[in-house]
Length: 437
Image (cartoon, rainbow, N blue to C red; front, side, top):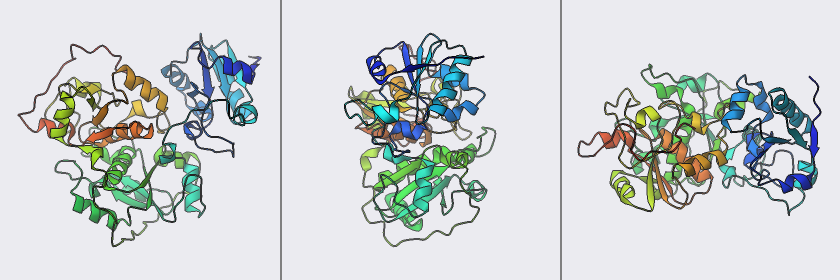
């Protein structure tokens, strides 16, 4: 089928930025959308109100489902832009062939939009802490990539009691770290300050080390004895949170984890790298105690008009159909907690991840949270069953620059283990939001 694709000028595009019936589509990599400069452009970021839909995703069979999930509908005017016209054309043609009649291309992003300081851009506030695979590759090759000003770094492959995840292929030079180094299996809470200090020193980490965390998604199965062993992608962000709580000043997370490295076709190592311990972490732990709250504070947050306890669990866990874990018997939720759907179960974060495991478009996460009453002007404490999913939601809020965000470390596991703590089951009477995002 032959299609003629219309062109949009810079003036025309600027005039429709706020029109809800138009959808501006950014087909560059998600990292460019977030703010990274990947083609030596003059400024980083994306056109306001645009949607992230990388050309890379055309290879997925469920592409049209991704599009509809983003609420991009056939009655919308579709305007596609990217680094390269060829990429924009491929995506535009897919829209046309999928029943979208009004599809246009904007070709002036690099040549006209970016050089003009008067034309607005948006970016993820702390995009520097969510890094592309290419940035990591440049770093380990001895270069000084953008947004890096240090002389010591370490790349860490996170896993939970699964060194095979590391030994079966990892980023060259990366060491492995079991999540058990930083959290205790008795409570799944953070370890004591002294234990954290010892663990970080054993892994060669000081307060001034730039740490790049990543993990490997390996299709968790709830029927396994340790399903979290296959969810290293979430475990990496859990470890990143605990390092920041301890006081590491510069913690980065590889966006998409090992999947992003593999998708780029970069070299994979099978060497079991030796850890290089150091003598002193360098600062009192915790340096950022405000990042974690415990049960007494969680109760204060529930009672406060200026704070919210945010439940990052599945709907089935929230209403008490399942506990979510093979080692937690109690089913239900903490009364007063706001629901922030993680996805299908305790070991998946589909509602916070894209199809390639990169972090979901931050504007979509913020929009969903806002609809559910989760707003940046309150103190937010995110929790799940034991801390992993809560840490990932927290990281998203932190990346967005939300000013007062924490993780309720004990979560449902600690709360439900105390019979004195109230709990609820069923659908809350006041619940009206659309929970399945």
